[in-house]
Length: 315
Image (cartoon, helix red, strand yellow):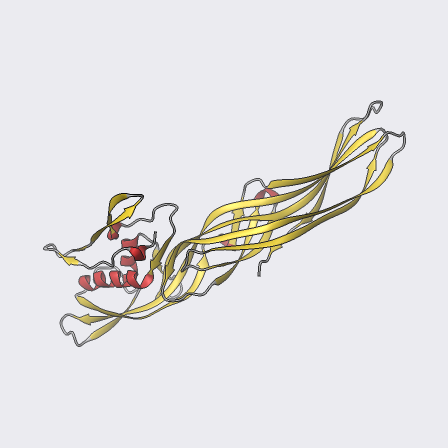
C-alpha cells in the first residue's frame, strides 16, 4: 500500500476543539474505515511514506495545540541512515543447506593403496534486499551498506555488502559465483570401500532489519496573535502540549519517531528492510571406510575441514 494514494487530509474543526479526518480505501475488495490518526501498517505490505505530507499533517496539529498557524516547510534533509543491528551483525542460528559431491574407491587387495582425489565445484551467493517500510522526500539515491552475517552454528562470520533505497519498493538482487576446490591423497586400506563426500554448506536467511533515517527539518509557523510574525520550529522541539512535530507524526502514522540521542535537532524515523540471501559458508571432506568381506576392521569415518568463506562483496 502506498500512503500517498490516500486523499491528502484536511482537518475539520469540531465543537470540542479537536481535529479529525477519516477516509475510505479499497483493500481486498472490502471497504474499511481508516482513521489516519490510528493508521497501522498491514503486515506484509510495502509502505513508502511521503515525508513531506506527513510533516505537513503533523505540523497542522502542532499549530492547533500551540496557537499557531502552519505556514510552510523551510528545509528537510535526510542526514544519515543507521541499522539497528548489535555490532552491525546479523545473527543466523539455523542449519545450512548441504551440497554433496561423492566419489568412491575400492581396494580388493591385501595392501593399502593411495590415490589423489580432486573436487572442483561452484556455488552462487545471492542477496535480495527490499524496503518494506520507507520514506520519500524528493529524489533519493541508492545507498550502500556493509554488515556481518554470523552463522552461529558454524562459528563463521561473513562480511557482505548490498544496495538499498529507503524511498522505493524496488528489490535489489546481487549475485556472485564462488569456486570451491579440494585436492587430497586418499589412503584406502586393504579390502575396503572408501566413499569420499565433498560437502559445501550454504547458509540461508530471510529476515527483516530495522534502520533509522535521521532527518533534519525546520517548519515555519505564523503567530495567530500577529500573522505577520513567524517562528521557526525544528521537528524535535516540544511545544506547549509536550509533543513535537515528530512525536505527532509518529502517533498519526504509528511509526517509531524519536529525537536523535546525539544531535537534538535530528529526528530519527524507523523503517525496515527485508534481507533474503544464501551465502557459501564452508566446505568439508568426509571419508567413510567400509570393510569388504574378509576385513575384520570396523567401519570408520574421518572429516577434514576445507575452505571457510569470509566475505561476499557484491560491489
